Length: 319
Image 1 (tube, rainbow, N blue to C red):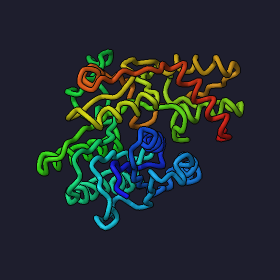
Image 2: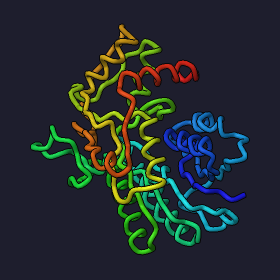
Image 3: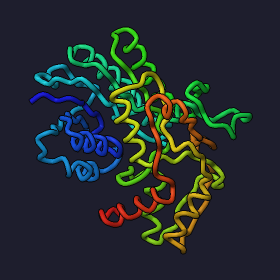
Image 4: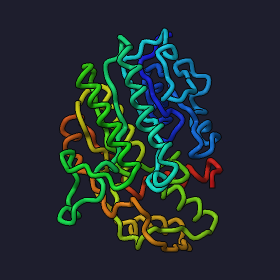
């Protein structure tokens, strides 16, 4: 069987939803995941349960840093969605940085070396991050971040995501394939990684435990619901070129997001601890470019998105 789309990191938060959507849209998908130990394998396997046994989906368990052309033989792959990465800002400091180099930089470079040997390969969608922008200058703290804004990562994680983005650009320029880099802003929703803020907050709230806020809660984020992020990926399969911000296009103080959670958990307990290294104080995506060029239009606001994430966590027994 020939496959149309390769999805790396298919067992993850965004990757599993993207793979499902592609199959639902009638496309054939090869998914690659190495099931790294950044969180339990059983969660990633649960993410893939709806694809298990589907003839339009094939799973390859492989470290991208060791992927070879033989792993993809007899597969006609035209489009690649590269979502696999070692995530997390705080864990990227110290000795674990070697994992970020391996899974974000080395893995991406090796993937690119394999792709340029596939005659049918035409287009790469690379999942970048708002972390490439880093901490905005003081004078820009209340301005939306454009794709042309300075990239100045504030964490080792951000450095590796920007490095991988630049690698994709270099290979695209030299080998001629089409490239879209999507800089995602704080994606949340069902299947969100257990280490991410809303996932941790909701689980603790269900158990009646205090949630921990690093900093004073005044930090602002552009929260992007997973369905909107997926739509950006799907749109970029057919058109677009270069870098695009993917966000809601609004920035919300973390304290305001906590008030949304209090609507569901009136007894919510909050503990504040010192700000962590690498955590920026402000993100806000200017999404005018992706709106104009790809027709992107985010639909889900924070209240609806958190309601759906709470419902999913409760119904899936991950509290």
